[in-house]
Structure formats: structure tokens, C-alpha cells
Image (cartoon, rainbow, N blue to C red; front, side, top):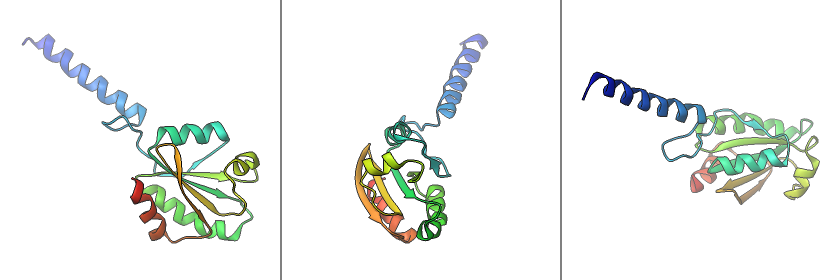
Length: 138
């Protein structure tokens, strides 16, 4: 092998590595979940998230809701500590989306696995309970 061949091979490997990093994906092609909750801005955005990530925990909340405020640090911790992507949907700003998923009270948490809703939890839950729920599907 010549030096030119080595340089081209190294460039190709580096290009592939950079492309994977830019896409935020792992070796299997599934996107790596972010460490912070993602604020959803509509039905298309939620559909994109549930298609992009294998497991997504969606927190339907309202700013004026006391239990939602209690749940917020738990949701943030789950985003950082579990393999699931965590999304937050403000029901006041996304009333149609909340209605589409049958959210009648907040907080309501929906767990999506492979694009399908697999679990629904209403009310404040402990971090351990939610983490165990996520682990069933991760």
C-alpha cells in the first residue's frame, strides 16, 4: 500500500465518523437521545421525534400546574440518565395535540416505543417508577 492509499483510507474513515457525529446516530443508525428534554412545537414535530428515537417519553404539562412543576426535575433527570428521548408538550400551546392523544389532565406522560404509544401515566410519578417503565422498552 502506498502513502496515498493510506491517506485516502484515513480520510474515508474520518468522513464516516464525522457524518455519524453530525447525524447524532449510533452504529445501528438509531439517533442518540439528547440529554435535555425537547420542547415539542406541534404534531409534525412529535411525529418526527417518535420516528427518530426508539423510545420517547412525552410529558404533557402546563406552566400553571403544580404537579407538573414537581415532575419537571424528574423529567429532566430522566432525559440525562436514560436511553429514552424525553419530550415536553405544553398543552396550552398545543391543545390539538393534547386532544389527539386524549390528554384530559396534566401531567400526563406517554411512552412511545418504535413510534407506537405503549404506556400512559397520569399524575406525578417517582423517577424510579418512570425509569423502570422506560427500561422495559429500551
